[in-house]
Amino acid sequence: MSPKTTPGLVRPEGACALVTGASKGIGAASALALAADGWPVAVHYGRDAAGAAATVAAIEAAGGRAVAIAGDVADPGAADAILSAAEAQLGPVLALVNNAGITDDGLAMQLEDDAFDRVIATNLNGPFRLTRRALGPMVRARHGRIVNVASIVGLRANAGQANYAASKAGLVGLTRTVAAEVARRGVTVNAVAPGFIATAMTHEIPEGQLGAIPARRPGSPEEVAACVAFLASDAAAYVTGSVLTVDGGLSA
Ligand code: NAP
Figure (cartoon, rainbow, N blue to C red):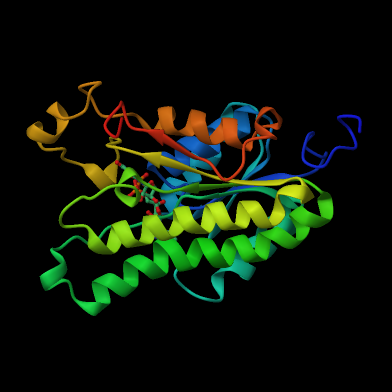
């Protein structure tokens, strides 16, 4: 088969990327990186409309195309509403970055049902529903890129984050299984697993924990975004079901 007819090798014209939680942090940096690679970008956000507008403005200032789309990913009806809004404004969504996520920490012995359920609903159920809704158009186009933003906490223990760890470990399982289901359709599904990244979510990294990172520094959102953009690119067509750690060697 030639590169043009092999499923998943060359991004079709007129497609767009959707990045959830792109009002700030890793999502905003990922939206900018994908726009720099030529994707029109649907900049999804939860509550921070000003942050999303700033991401859209930064993409437009760099010569790209973007629209902001609101929605609570924990809401079961949100996936269809978000994807439909992106499709109506920018065309088929052939790259989906499931980035929106939260923490609500506590030791398992004391964790309330609500804190457990909210984290799972946002970090795992949301990406599942968005993935399910996004796959049809990707399979029809014989091209798709799904990148899930997991965490090294989904791969190894971090006391005090049982809910978050369960959500991210679930996201890794979802990534690998869906990857196997759609690989022959030209759709890749991968995850990035960041370590400590300097964003609003991690406003203070304890000195002791910084010393445990072989690189001796937190990562930047841009360093994660570069990996997201690679996994969404044509160059990554044969990478699927993988989990790329971006952690300065913390889990090495
Ligand atoms: P952040 O700065 O706190 O940004 C989180 C983003 O997710 C915001 O855009 C927020 O939207 C959105 N969001 C949260 N809950 C939402 C909901 N229910 N519906 C819609 N949007 C929602 O976080 P970050 O540090 O960039 O983290 C991004 C992703 O990376 C998360 O999945 C996180 O678990 C993962 N991660 C982060 C680190 C780290 O060290 N920072 C490490 C490993 C993994 P609004 O602000 O608009 O409401």
